[in-house]
Image (cartoon, rainbow, N blue to C red; front, side, top):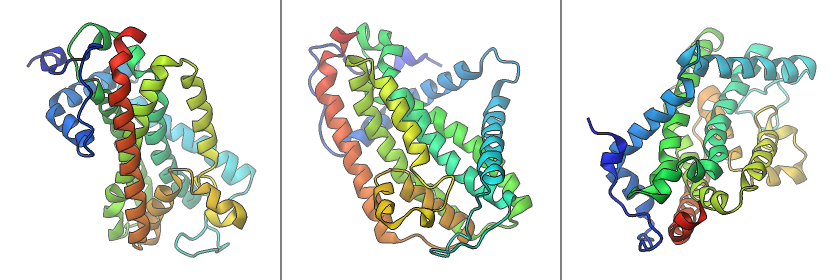
Length: 294
């Protein structure tokens, strides 16, 4: 089996033509290079855990530790509780275990978003060889990062499923809709990654700014609190957080067993596709100067 370098098919030098700006291109390119995407994703997973004593077990330990810490702080110290999902503006409370499950569901989605977007500004600098010396489809680098993030999310979801079975019992059939609900988040992540990986190459402060924004995003989406607790004038502002809608819908199909609003999901999907297309256009235009910037 050849190495990833044997799969490189696209020129990345400064004189390369601007990529096709079609809205379909962000999906067609990774499909053409799908084998390379998977190999690079596997490389990232192996490099992340290589040399550690626990190895891939860290993928299980890390979300469990975060879950324990956040549950202690928000569920025990601050006495917060999750509401009965599906009852709007309800103050009905559940115990710490159910609160932990509700919190964990939101954290899995946030970590997926944070792992990809947080790494985006440094992707090109970490792959200078690909940028400067060889023919390589740079647009797939966020996809390879996505592979690792999805792997971590799947491991965390398996842990979630085990705890869910003990605490909540049999899940509703609507839980099968989780991948569909999460799809707009994945699409939006790719668009943001293309934008940030380009800006991050030219402006090194981007990494620090994105870190601050992600910290703000963690506390401005309904992970640690139900949306109804936020005063009315501020609730609409929270919807500017790209994770708010997805987290609410994930909890709806996972705990309440009800279908999310179809129109809200379609609007969310449309916004995600627009962000992805804008990100692709930005990346395609700015990539001509990458080789000179590294």
